Image (cartoon, rainbow, N blue to C red; front, side, top):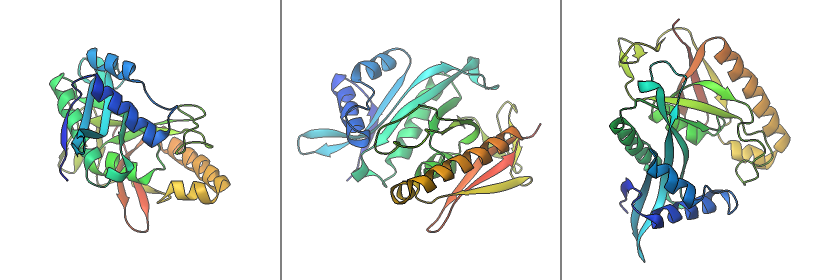
Length: 254
């Protein structure tokens, strides 16, 4: 079944967003409609994916974010868009909806005159890495320990909520084997000084099978990524197949 992508247009859309969050993370763990309404009214972006349903149009995914000051050199006007929350209903995943929502968000952010979107995700979630790094072309050089404290939803409970904060530079392009910013503020070689870090292909399955092993994995990956970022490397690629999930890290040019 086909779906459409559009901006939220009324309070009902924001309430639908609440309902999706409740299905994905559980009832107590939602950003309420009054907050997403306020964000959209004051420079934020709220976009949904919709398909026909038995009672008319139904929302099957969304992305919500807001404008934010940033320390990243090269960001237009010293501002970025921070994509705070996004989800697709589990039964609707695997159809490219998450990527379509992100690309619509990018169009909206460009229309505001900005060139950088940031967001966080769990670096051990391979499917998210495939979208964020492998498909969209984000980079990461920021590791946040226990970013959201003790999270109690089903996906995150029981482990430190470590996160990558990724950068999606909307004016980034590949030139002569190098990724470059349009203003040349950020460069790294695509050919030299690289290494890889492999993560579990299914971290949620590892958590269910052996929580202690999952914690050891979290702490080991934390150490490896923090060391790499401190030495001037950035995550620049990700590959996922039936057996492996592997990040590529590349040293940033000085």
